[in-house]
Length: 156
Image (tube, rainbow, N blue to C red; front, side):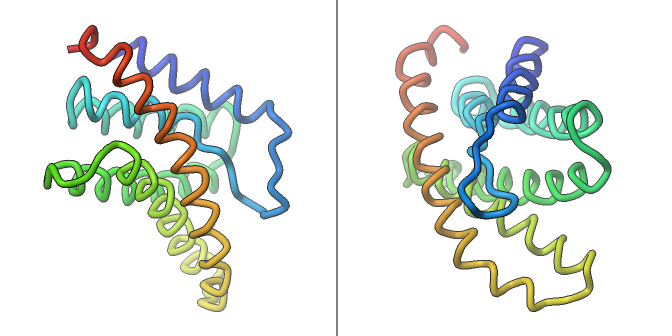
């Protein structure tokens, strides 16, 4: 578990260093979701959730602030819940689950942002975030799927 947490923190750090700007405020690639999806499929649900939450809190303290922790926790919890529920149906593959994780991470953050600023007009930003979540979730899903195929059996 420590290796996965370290890997997730490294991904978080690398992502903070990359001047990755879509022209859309708040949109990131979500490299750490590779670790979460990999763990969800190859290690276990409880372990994946624990690593996801620990990574959010620790990376928030290391590379962000209290607001980034709040937004990331909201997005991370909702994203994980949706990915877990979809995976438990056994009807969806890695790519749709990763895409749903990317989309619902943005939805969770937007809900918290609306509550923090007490203005629900922020939901006009939803279509942009949905498109960004689909694109980044798809890219992360491809990477996670390849990792699961190549090293998934060794992690069990």
